[in-house]
Image (cartoon, rainbow, N blue to C red; front, side):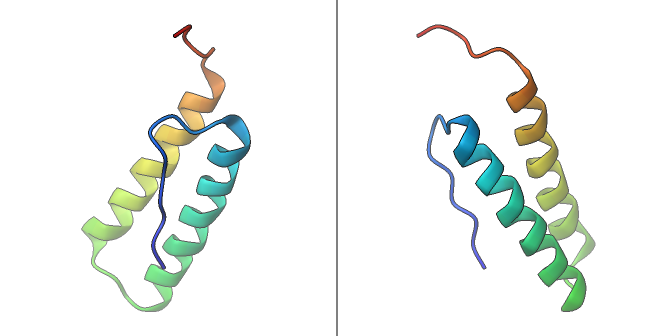
Length: 59
């Protein structure tokens, strides 16, 4: 599974990406993926969650 992101995802797309990363992490755990891979997935998911809580900057 590959998670893809646009440059500036909207709130709904961020939720979809978070779900996709959660599935990717579960798949990685099931297939005994390298720890660094799982850490990168978790860090990316956490970053998306934090960004979704911050007010959007004006363009």
